[in-house]
Length: 404
Ligand SMILES: Cc1ncc(COP(=O)(O)O)c(C=O)c1O
Ligand SMILES: N[C@@H](CCSC[C@H](N)C(=O)O)C(=O)O
Image (cartoon, rainbow, N blue to C red; front, side, top):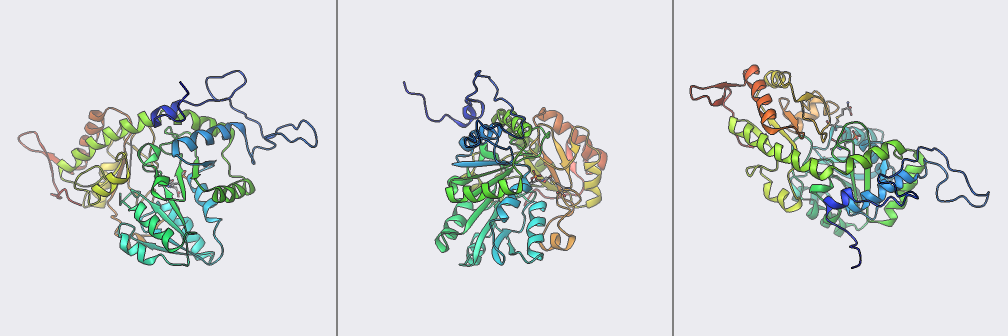
């Protein structure tokens, strides 16, 4: 029987052929900046690691299968991906962006806008008709993220990408898939031109490297992206490529467990009476849309408490949940986006975009779900957010209703 061309994602994640001369079980690490030539006229496949390195090539080929891309590039961070992508724009180009993109994404687009390099316009991407009405022949790029970090807004990627390409086949639809990872979503199948992810998060999963991954099916875009990566020198270092290859092998099992835990925690918080934002809850306003685009719901949720001070007390009273930015790691984290990951968006803009200052974000890891719920219960009790009634049930002191 001929070997299958491709396997299921879980298998592809762990199965990779290294092509190593000794058949090493793990892809070898080529920790070398430069490569000797056979002769002056024969450079060989690699000359210099900024331009290419066998460990990076191995990782990129592996990622291409996983992301269903023709070409992928591994670079030094998620923001590095956005830097590479925005260098494809020309002065005065118009871009349309979501109004709840990750804070760092918002910062870079705002920087380029203020410098006069691009004209960036931000809209609520949950309003598909609004976004469609804003796309015109001047639009060069569209930046989308779904579910958004941290307001968990869902974007109709397929419909927006299709409409954009009808208006102008050259418009580049860019999608940040950090929240879902390739396990739960394949944005290139939905008409996206360039997908990128902060590999610092789920793809690596251990918070021991910074990395970013770009993916495309277009040879033209791949050529342009590579040109920028080689010119600016942001390609991922060999050791970080090697670590990312290692982390990638457990991606499916990590995401599955993180999601199982997150669903339990979302339901727990909802039952206590908080306003919980998680696309896996049936009362999320875009539950159906999300379910139609993704294979799962991820492991990031946010909830409001009704008071900044109360949120601060909750965050500072957990033990297992670490107070830290980032997500997608094996351990659980708690944060207040307005003070941490999204502090780079000024308070006025946050207000205009209905960004709740009391929002708490939970990034769920692979620990035991009951331990995590106990940890949260303790923090909620210690902070005074909940009390126990005579039937030993938790009830929400501030009486928030569980609705979005
Ligand atoms: C959704 C999202 N995209 C991109 C980034 C940027 O990635 P990195 O921190 O790897 O630069 C982050 C976080 O930093 C993020 O949360
Ligand atoms: N100080 C950093 C904040 C990084 S936030 C990391 C991550 N995307 C998250 O959402 O937690 C900065 O200014 O970029």
